[in-house]
Length: 483
Image 1 (cartoon, one colour):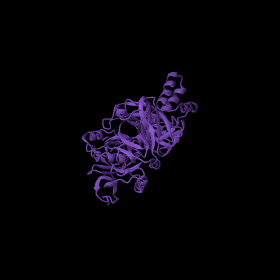
Image 2 (tube, one colour; image 1 turned 120 degrees about the horizontal axis):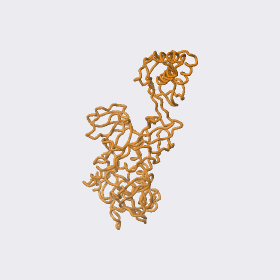
Image 3 (cartoon, rainbow, N blue to C red; image 1 turned 90 degrees about the vertical axis):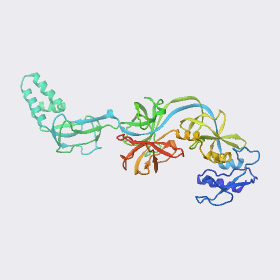
Image 4 (tube, one colour; image 1 turned 90 degrees about the horizontal axis):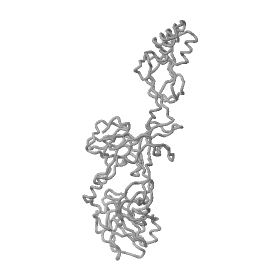
C-alpha cells in the first residue's frame, strides 16, 4: 500500500477532518500527481508542494486510475478494513412519526390556588415566611385581625342567645362567606366568645408561591396574599413546526429528557394542542402533562422532548448516520461492490430515531455506507467535479428552503450594529450540536432593541445561501415579549 496515502488517511481520521483530494488506490499503484491543494480549501491550487493560507501543508491530487469512472472511488480491501467501512441495506419498513422539539416546564395550572381575603384586615401572625415553603392541606398560613370579622362573630353570638332560627342561620352563613372556617365557627358557638384573630388555613398541599405579604401588613380583598402550587404533576409547553402540526394530537405519548439528569427519561402525554399558530415563529404550541412524584421536574427548566405521533408504513429507510447533509444537498455513499463506492444524491423525508426516510435516489436492496462515508464522500466529490463547490441557483433555492431548527438559550451579548447575538444555547439535537456559547447572525427584519443580557429565549435557525445558520425568529421563553 502507498505509504503516503496511508499516512494521510490516518492524519485525517485522527484530526476529524474530511479526506483531502488524495484518492485511495490499491496496493502497488503510484499514480501521477496533477496538482497540490489546500486540505481545508480544495479551490486553492498550486503546481508544487507548499503551505496553504491557513499554514497547513498542501496535499497532492492524483490522476484517476485507468478504467475507473470519475465519480467512483476504489478502495483496497485492506484499507477498507483499516477505515472500518460498514454498510447497511436500504429497507422498506414502518417508521414512527417522531417530533423532536424543546420546551420548558410550567406549573399545572389546575393545581394552583390563589388566596385572597374577603374583607379588609391586618396580618397579625404569618406562619409561612418565604416562597418555596411546603405546606399540607389544613396547615396554618396566617392569623388575621379584621374589625368586620369580629363584628360578624358578635352578631352570631347574639343570634345564638335568641330563639330566631333564621338569624342564627344567616349570621353563621355570613361568617362562612367571609372566609371563617367551620371549625372556628363551631368554636365561637361553643365558647360564646368572639376571637380577635381569625386563622387562615391552606386549602391544598403544595409549595408557597408569590408570597406578597409580611407580618403587620394591611390587606384588602384585591390583594393576592399568596398562591399554593402542587408539583405532583407539571405541564411541559413545547413548540411544533407548522409542517408537523397535523402530526400532534391529544393522547399521544411523549418523552422528556433534561440535561441535568443524564440518562433519565420522563414519560407523559400530549394533553392539549393550542388552536393557533404563532405568526412570528410559525410554530404550534402543545401542552404535555407529566407525573412528577419526586418533584424532579421544576418550573422553568428546559427539556428536550420527543412526541410519538403515529406510524408511516411502507417507506424506504436507511440508518440516520448514513445520510450526509450539506448546505446545498443530501447524499449517501452507495456501495457498488468489489471495493467501489459512489456518491448518490437523495431526497430525505421524515426522521425517526436512528432511521430516516428516503423518498428519492435509492431503491430497496441498495447498500449504503454507514461508517467512514465522509472520507469517501470527500474523495468522490473532488473526483467528480470542483463545480459542486459553487452552488447553482436551484441549489441556493433548496438552501433557502431548508427546514428550520429550534433551540433555547440565554442572551449574553447584543451587537446591535452588526445585528448579532451571543447566546449560550442548550444542546440542539437536530444539528447534533452540544450546549455551547457562540455568536449568531440575526435576520435583518428582527428588532433587538428590547432584548437585554440574561434574557432566556426560544429561537429558530435557518440556513442562508452560504450554509450558515441565522436566527430567523426569537422570543422570550415565557412569551412576554415577541420579536
